[in-house]
Image (cartoon, rainbow, N blue to C red; front, side, top):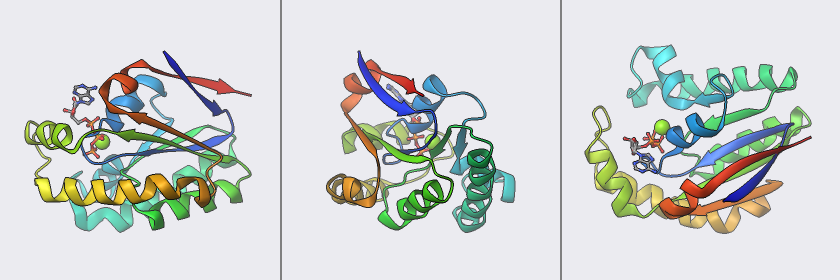
Length: 171
Ligand code: ATP
Ligand code: MG
């Protein structure tokens, strides 16, 4: 068991390529309303979770809800790939604005595993090249996360470390 400490007053970013298991991890470790998923918000604003054209509107709505939750003092988890530095920067900023700590939990899963999982999913027609691009972004991100302002960076390498992780909330 690896205990990942997460301050109660925090904005947690899950970071990982498509198929790395972010939504699965969120469902296992966080409450139903604590996790804000970019897919779910794409669905809310477009009726289609997979409509990539709905991404800007989805994130605008997601950040709005995240801000409301942080204002109410509620731990909030962002379930999106978060592999791009620009995407993370907005959330670090949001956390600061609400005096909560930005935390990153990285699911670093081999490209081959993510590609195989996505091939087996319905509605995720991302080809291997999308996963490869996200992996490249993730690799660069791993080096940069600490400097981006995250107060805790937890990196889980591979399926075994992910399966063994537990979340410990700290007051
Ligand atoms: P996306 O960014 O596309 O939303 P994701 O990171 O949220 O992807 P999940 O939806 O959690 O990924 O998982 C992708 C697929 O892999 C799902 O079919 C899920 O059931 C499966 N999966 C997730 N975690 C594991 C695991 N630890 N072992 C085996 N399969 C897993
Ligand atoms: Mg997901």
